[in-house]
Image (cartoon, rainbow, N blue to C red):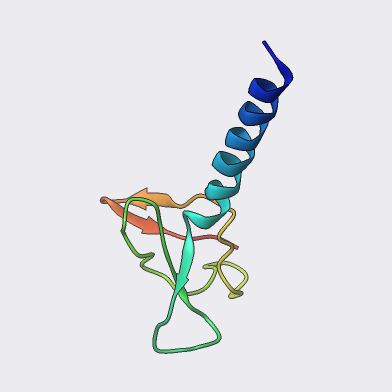
Length: 74
């Protein structure tokens, strides 16, 4: 494998891994301090803040689906 192919593979992997953080993004809601999250499957979280700590949802944490609806965590 030549070095250009290696660099191309590294770039492709880097772009793919950077997309992971963007699959969950904030969606404006009734309270601008606590946006809901829209996930890769196009569903929006039922909650706008962490159930236990009452803080902002963390887009790096995957949701848990309850009856097919995503619940976000902080």
